[in-house]
Amino acid sequence: MDCTEVDLSQEPALHEEAASVLMDAFLAKGNTAWPTLERARETVAECIAAPNHCLAILCNGTLTGWGGLRPMYDKTWELHPLVVAPAHQGQGVGRALMQALEQRARTLELNGIVLGSDDELFETSLSQVHITGSNALVEMQRLTNLKRHPFEFYQKCGYSVVGMIPNANGKNKPDIWMWKDLTVE
Image (cartoon, rainbow, N blue to C red; front, side):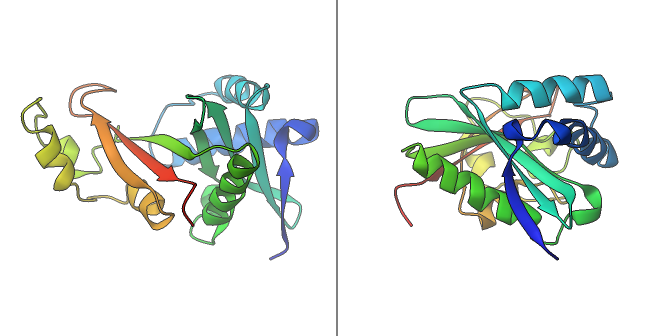
């Protein structure tokens, strides 16, 4: 497969395709974060706006995935979102995209990337227990994947679980916070 990386903000002809990929990928999992093309278009517009950075992977001329970086702290930015078209998942597109975004972050002289990996579909052990202040750390240490939650993909890319927000998206729907130190190879 012939794949190339492009700066999505410089490719307006790809914005509609990026919105479709975002909506379709999440709906395919049963996640309604972007239930309409209009909502997905709004997110694309936010992601390509300065000072954010947004990259896409084109394979054989088709947009297969894209992701963005946006300021969160001075030297650590947030990855949001990262999406791969369902037909191209498991083919290395996500990993290539992560590497490209990390390289971009290094050129921006960032020290790290943080991301939130929501568990809105009860895919991890954290969604199976009532999290309180007293058991949060223990439950994070016991974190297991029940139904192909993406936190393991991020771990394979070198990200560590550094926290969580219990019930962030509703009862037993935590947001799992992950981080990667870009100063270490």
